Image (cartoon, rainbow, N blue to C red; front, top):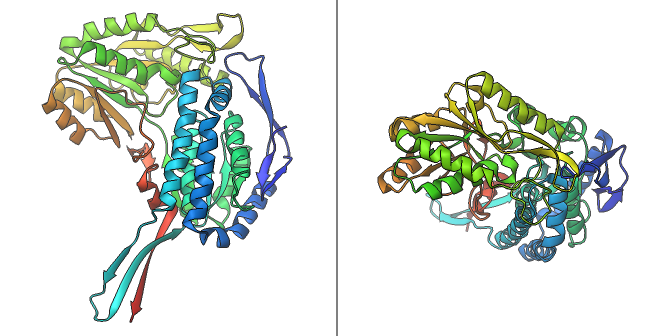
Length: 479
């Protein structure tokens, strides 16, 4: 039994959740304690007690702790990557890469603890000095999704702690293993009791308690648009700050002058790696007429070479979908697209067992052509290995189609034209833009976030994380 961490102690919960391997549903990864409302309130109380001292801790103390956490994560990359691949279903190389990213994030924010910044300015009044500093917000509730079960917790927990906040962390119910392993590392890092608390459990209990408790000063959430809207409403009602990272329907534009190999590689990576279960995945391929047929043909041929199998097996390109519910949603959207006139050009078949005969949630990546912008497949996030193709007349038409979405997280373009690349970077309505690169896959030391229905609030990652995890104070002194 993997327990919750509250006030420095490992505590039993009030229920048990079973963590199942999507590559082999006979394999039980582990059993994890489930917190209830009372236990979540206990964690908030512990964080409140710890905050006064931790918020005044020295930058060196915070650096030492976060750097040690990052060092251990990196040293255990193979072990933690194996766990991540086993519980979430992304391939082992991708899982290890995510673990490395988490370790690097902790090390980056260890450095940020030593670089708090600030300004000293003269007042407009003689003899008066002005200091502008940043201070910790307070207790921060962190709610993370299942698709990046160690990297996203890292990029929320590390800056929260680096800037002197106390944390109550609720990971996704579906994949608690990586989150628990991270919490276990933090429990031995030298953090004072109550500074970091892990409460695993249902959103309706744990998450809602974090949203409603007036002692929680800020909530950072990554997940669905519908849940994000509930987070926003609850926090706004009591004037708590909130940060939302939600859905995406990210376009990748392929122009006639694109290098075909570069375009196909970027589209396959963006759309299908990590089983398409990334908010930055390119699920809409917008292709101009001159290259459309060649591109679709090359995509289909490349997709035939992708190996779908157990996520931990060497040579696997695409692992399973995370669970039965997500698999059902993927299959439903493929059917909806066909019913609305789309053509299934490649893939989209359910695979009941992997190459070793183990039952799992496998789906061959699907490419749907002959779609129009109004189809549901081009308006709604599927969150699986399902990609649609829209034909565009020219660059101007492609740009308009790319921006024709309620989302605005990432956008990509494949082109050899500096003119079009430069114009697209400025005019794509997205928080992140990639040229001749996959839309999925970003650096850990620069801002992450989007526009429109994809994001709300300050950016995550990099130095910009301070905008959410600190509050600004202006102090005046007369000599």
